[in-house]
Amino acid sequence: MNDLLSEEQLPELLKIAEAAARSASELILSGFRSPRLSAERKADGSPVTRFDREAERIIREFIAAHQPKPWPVLGEELGDDTGQARYRWVVDPIDGTLGFTRGLPNFGTLLAFEDVLERRALVGVIHLPAMNETYCAARGIGAWCADERLHVAAPRELADCLISAPAEYQFRLAGIADSHAKLRAQAPHLRWFGDCWAHAMVARGPIDALAEFNLARWDIAATEVVVEEAGGRVFIRDARDVRGKYDLIVGSPRAAAAVAELLQF
Image 1 (cartoon, one colour):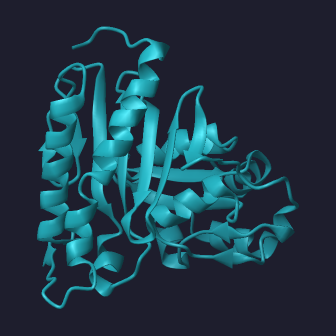
Image 2 (cartoon, rainbow, N blue to C red; image 1 turned 60 degrees about the vertical axis):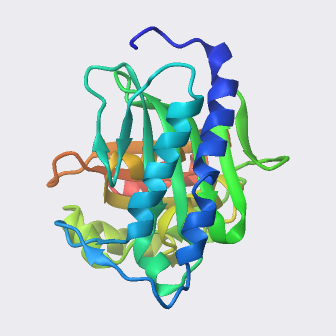
């Protein structure tokens, strides 16, 4: 299970990942804007639905049936069976569950295949069921949405960039309270675009850069490879106060570097 992966295997894994990420779409959409949709609260206070759990089960079963080796899975809803494996799948069946329960269409499925030792995603998929769009990438292959090659935004001055960043209190939770005002002063087009849809828009180019804090590995693994293969830059650091969580900045090289400097990355 720990045999080194060759680059020639990545196209096959990308096909599996794209199909696996889409495999739960019908189920997920059957709950979207349904009057019967209900949510529970997990221990951390975040919402979860039966569609989250069942979607991850479907994705895991698809992977098990199609992958060439029995690699393990780290999933948000059904746990981690990584063990000592060098490689694993990382899945968030419904990223943006809160929006999903409110009828917002910017939720999606995140799936990555990563090198655990290097903590580096090799294949990534951002699937947006409500929009029927799939953003996928693998190292050395580029990032794509259907037949369209993806490219991050062209270089711009920070004052002209569209930057996605959370509310000020999230900066306080991340231990960089004063950085929100600094960013706002330098980037007047500061907005908050939530969930994996915003990550996809960084890879496509409408959003120049994005910052988020206290994320799990399943929130960022797919985005990491999709944005980098679209020509972007990714900054990841361990969250200051929450063990096992990460802070993230992604964007065009120029915009991401400017935001990273302002946020003390």
